[in-house]
Length: 459
Picture 1 (cartoon, rainbow, N blue to C red):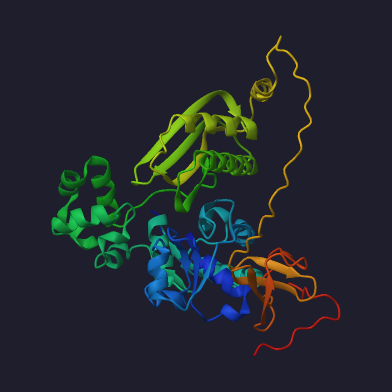
Picture 2 (spheres, one colour):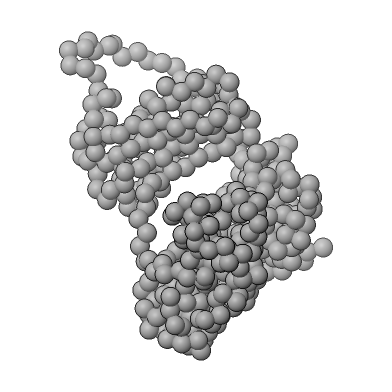
C-alpha cells in the first residue's frame, strides 16, 4: 500500500454509446443503446439517458426495448471504438511507462513510475490534466480515480462517474469502505454476495468485524483470506504493463437455431477465418484449436485439437475446426458457435503450412482425371445488408449513417461529428450511389461532402 494516491484508474463514460452520440449529432442528449440487435442480443453499453429507463450492460436487448422503446438501437462498431481507445492509451503512455489496459475503455496507470506524481496534489493535477487531454483529443469524457491501491482507485473512478475525479487519501480507506456493500469488492459477485448475506454480512465493515477465520470458514482459504485483506482496504497488486494473452477467440449467437449441417459448417469456417485475423493482428500463433458449440437446450460443448506446433495459417485452423465439428451432435439445433486458438506463441511452425498444402494435393500414383468443362450456374444476387449505426457514403449527399433498413430499402441520416443534426433520406438497398463508409474523426475532422453540395437544414 502506498503513502500517496499515485495509482490512477481511468474509465471512459458509457464509452460505446458516448462515441456514437459524438459521431451522430442527432443522438446527442438522447437515449442510445449499443449491442446485438437480434432476439438473443444483449446490451453492450447504454448511454446515461437510456440508463434512466433502467437499461444497463448485459441486459437482454428485448428487455431493453421494452424499457426504452424510443431509444436509438445500434450495432457496435469495434474498429471505430478501437481507434479512439488507441488515442486514449497513447495519452496514458505519456504519463507513465506502467499502463495496464483492462479493456478498450479502462486502464490503470502508475503515476509514481512516470515521475509525474508523488503526493496528493501532484496526483490530482495529473488526473485533471489527463481528463482535459482526453476531451480535447477524442471529444469524449472519462472518469478518474486516484488512490494508493488498484482496488481503491477503481472504486474511486466509479464514485467519480460521470465526468469526474475522486481522490482517496491514504489512511481513510477503512472509513470509506465500511458502510459500502460487500459487492463493491473485487471477487464478490451475486453468488458470493448472497452467501455472505445469509451469514449476516452485507457491508464491508461486517466483513472486517467477522475476522479472517470466519471468512476462511465460509469461503475457503484463498478467497476468504484475500477478502479479509480487501475489507481492511489492503491491496498490494502492482500495475502491470504487459498482460500475457492466453487465447484468441470469436463467437456468434444466432437469432434462430441453426439446423442445417452445411450452414453450421460454413459458419464454423467463417469464424475460423475471423479468429485467425485476430490472431495475426495480435502478433501471435497458436497450437491448440478450440471449438465451442451451444446447443438448443443451452448445453455447451467444447472440443479441442492440439497441433504439432503453433500456426497462424487460416487453412490449418479452418480444417482443424471442421474436424472438431464432425464429433459434435447438432441434431437439435445450434444457438451459438465459437472458434478459438490457445497455446499462443510469437512464431509459427513452418511444416504446418506444408501439411495444409499436402492435404490439398492428390496422393502419389493417383490417376489424373480428364478435365471436364462445367457450366457455372448463375448466382442469385445477394441483397446488401445495412446495419443500424454503421457508416455510409452517398455519391451526392456525402457521409451519413444507417438509421434502419427493411423491405428492400435503407434509411440514412446525413450528418457528421461537427455538423448540425442532418436530414434523413431513404434509398433502395442496392442503390449504386450508396456504399459503406469509414468512420469520421470525432475531433478535428473536415466536412466530407463533395464540393458544391450542401444539405438543407434539419426539419
